Image 1 (spheres, one colour):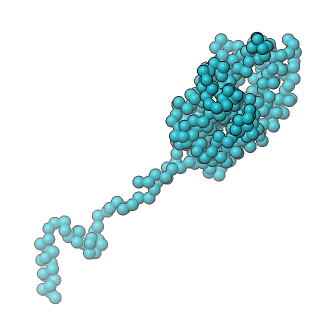
Image 2 (tube, helix red, strand yellow; image 1 turned 90 degrees about the vertical axis):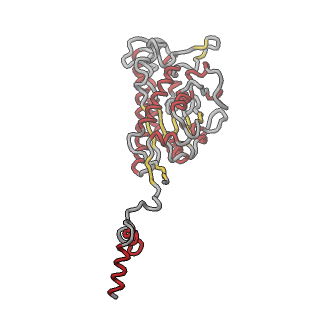
Image 3 (tube, rainbow, N blue to C red; image 1 turned 135 degrees about the vertical axis):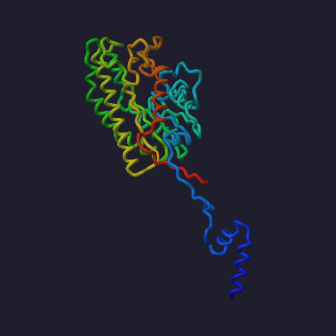
Length: 334
């Protein structure tokens, strides 16, 4: 027995350097070097706001402030089927946003002039409802809505077509306030339907700009300084209502840790220094077709510069995000 032990010791002593640790590892499972695991688990990454927006299709919905009404008649050709009825124009902010980011699923532009919240869901001019253009492939939805629910076209007409010195403009206050209050449940319904169709998407709702200087000093288009201040105030009330609905909706998404977001862009001060009556306005003033004696639809809609300003607001919001972490994730396999 002793001889066998001595023989084993001598044999081990004659082994080359480095073999002993290998032998111990193989036989005794001791002294083995640290090794990387043979397989790594997939990694879950939280997406940035820009990554969320760009993953799929950009779908642009809304009313005339999104369709491009203010520059429609200057356009070379309609952008797609039905654009001639909805006055969709390449001069809108939508094509500019589409050029600023690469959207994996491309862009679908279906905003329609005159749209109300109910028409977003039911359709206009025999066209498919705008809401049906949204599905799970949508990663970004932009939307301007509410002005037609408040009846702003009719309100503005009533303010312009009046006798000098009349108070007919501000006498609409109660009716407009009521319509703006009624907007809340209708806008919530639109947002809820968008979330059902595109639960992972970012939804950006764009407000309206103040049409007149904050402190107007002269009449414009038969609108007195008092009329202009009132119209500014109604725009502020409308924006505050839309913004409050959007904020409440997004808080609910965040509270349940849901993906996607609903975000509001307050455009009220966006045209400051370029309101109607200024030397370089971002809104068209009153336009009248003298041959037909009617108000042109471009009136009080953004000019080309106005839509470029809107594009800046939207692209900045895409980059900034909702002001909270996104709950959108991707799995990265090693």
